[in-house]
Length: 114
Length: 115
Image (cartoon, each protein chain N blue to C red):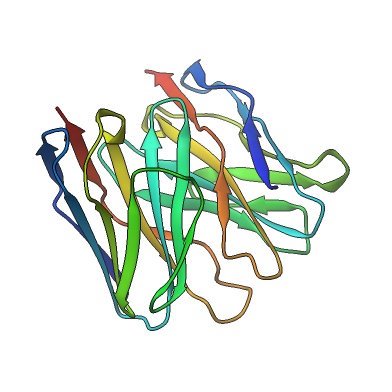
């Protein structure tokens, strides 16, 4: 069965600090990988996604993630966070073929101090 | 453009009462539809998904059921609510055709409190 593990449940950073949120998944086949973000009071929305090709993908608001197949990882990074990045971040995975189910991690709450 | 609606936005129900949460999608046809429950520290738990009218897959044995009476309508129900059913319920949809655009789009959610 597929599973997704996010290493940090709560992260507190100061503005301009660098961010890396860990995500590891468990699945034997080819997968699609996602990071979603939920800003306070807003809908859950897509931050970035990986389907194939360059394992370093760039998303909105300066975020990027790197797919490392050998490590089953898809870590999210941002070189310099802003107060407006305060949100909850979810890593998700589904199977490339017949992937009707998308499995989400437990989420990481990021708080950026101004 | 596509939109997704959920109602009600908030709901307070007594233990043992029935439940019906509705989700509708506009601007697309034959979407995959999903119900999730979001709990603090536990992320999004997939409850049900549907690939077509009348087709429901249950992921977690529980006190809830789902139905898809129309292509773009997805309903979450319970005959008798439990305290443990309290939570934030999210509906989502996804385009079924092809492999490229298979991210999910989420609704605003329903906050359910069972007393």
